Image (cartoon, rainbow, N blue to C red; front, side, top):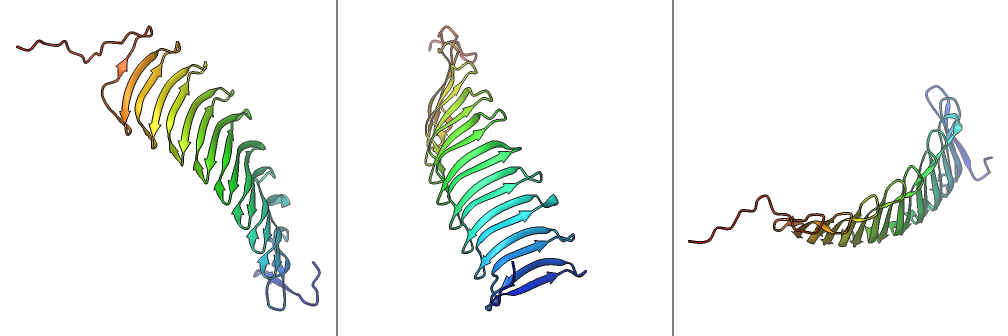
Amino acid sequence: MEPTPNLTEITKKDDEGRVVERYYQDPEKRMEGTATSYDAAGKPTGERNYQAGKLHGDTVAYGENSLVLSRARFKEGQLDGTTLLYDNLGRLTQEVRYKKGVLNGESRIFEKEMLRLRQTFVDGKLSGPALVYSDTGKVSVEMNYRAGLLDGQHKTYTGDGKLVRVMNYKGGKQEGDQLEYYDSGELLVRTPFKNDKRNGEVIEYYKNGKPKKKTVFKEGLEAGEPIEYEENGKEKKSENSKPKVAAK
């Protein structure tokens, strides 16, 4: 940027006389226009844009070999628009969106160019579906948010896309039945929750759909002895059970 009659160029140097920063000031000594930082070799390490002393426009940070490490956009001193982060090889690691300094819109996280997480913010809080991806690129976790809290179904999948678990949330707390499945798809366990605690009858199943074990919980604590069943549905005899003795 060429200095104008209304701007003064400011150059800062280190003890060895090397330029470490160059920027411009208006008559009120507020930063204006492009400010650039430099490393010991004279290569830019960052560029920022100002308007009336506030960050305004694109800001860029550079790493080794002048690779971009981050790129963000500001408006009147606040993040506003898309911010991009990169690793040391120049690969995108994070993409987030801001509005007036607050997270707003879709956010994505990458690892080695592979999408790992996709979620959405509204006024700084997670809202709507959020998806976690496995090494195969398939969804491994699917959850829902409302006003920053888990709300709705929360599903977990195997690496090849098979459903493993379904949980239900309301206002950030687990509520309703949690269902777990065998690899082959049959129901394995049904666990009822109330106010984030196991509450009610937990039933484990055989693959044929018949109950294997029943355990009652009350406010997260086991209430009573579990009842176990044979695969044919017949109740197993408890090892701790003792024959009744007639009263004398």
